[in-house]
Length: 352
Image 1 (cartoon, one colour):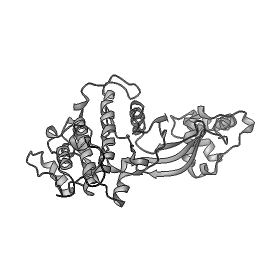
Image 2 (image 1 turned 135 degrees about the horizontal axis):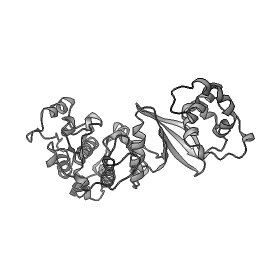
Image 3 (image 1 turned 180 degrees about the horizontal axis):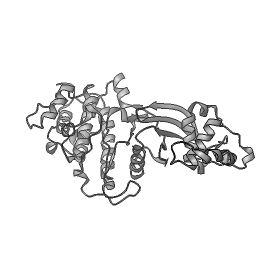
Image 4 (image 1 turned 30 degrees about the vertical axis):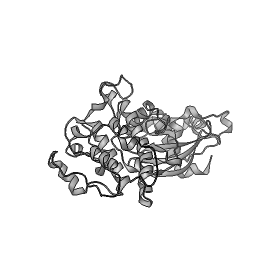
């Protein structure tokens, strides 16, 4: 077993339990016991009586009898399918690791959720519905773990902290992002956490949108999480009572917690905030201005600030249309994609 697993024992244990059918073992005699005695009892308990909080009574005594057989299954051969390479990131809900799939000979991302396990099922179903080059492909999932395509790249926030973009590069990246948004909305999905940190930029400025854990799946309103049903019609006006997302990207109606708000228009607002950040390097509204949104959605709310001379008039027009405070006055993602500024050829510098 690779020495790397010793540094990530918890993740390795979960992989062995949840994906035992992956293990290509031949004879039990070829296996080495890789677990400490305490870990052995814990894993056997999880495998056989997961509904109990702790091993109890006679059941605890019988673990030693079943231990040799089950450890043959759980002990990892040198060619076990997933090999953890390194930790990529830690988050409040879980960790993401870079791994290697020995069977398919490719890199994978291993996402282990530590709390909010419903996020795993949510993201797994969302990724299974989406077929777009800008969203990672799902390989396998379990109640605590997602195995998906590994995407090389740097998040957009980090890029913007170190460099500025001209309009050509901004358009190239933003067009891809809007195409992804249009695709997942058409599949009955609302991301609910669009932000610079969840946008990865790879070679050639290829865009990948990640982290669908907070997404809303509209076909689940009438069916259980385990089953897919027909998509609800009219994805352009999907209504929501979900108030998640990161503060700087939340629309006025979401901040105000307006019931049954138009979730698609809220996504357009978040996209508009991202476009503004790419253009000016700052957020369009201060924290105090965002708090003002809780007082109401006045049609006479001050317009978003545009720094004259920093971008073309067409780009100014698009930003203003995406960041209109009344959601009914805000354009849709379909309209964004046919806006004259976004339909321009990427000419690079000298466009303003």
